[in-house]
Image (cartoon, rainbow, N blue to C red; front, side, top):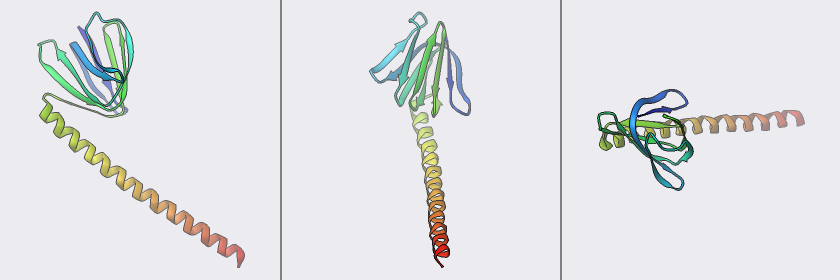
Length: 132
């Protein structure tokens, strides 16, 4: 058995004992079993699947990240991730989560644009006052 731990910047997404892990790196997908050699892999955005002790398969969608296998410990670090029991549920969670992230980014960009335009306007006003 291996101990899989998935870390996000704000939380531990998952901590499970697993038999097998399948993930995607730049060179393609790969499979880890308990006796696999220690390794480090840069993950690309995609699905990671893992098999639990009872033989059931679960999935996690990950943004790009890093996977480190050392002995029986497998540590994954990513910026964003969502776990689900089945692919349909996972697809819905991904859509919901990324839609809210896109909305927050849009609001943030709008606020930054307003700040920038106010800064430029005040800078221009300050230049006019200096010439008067």
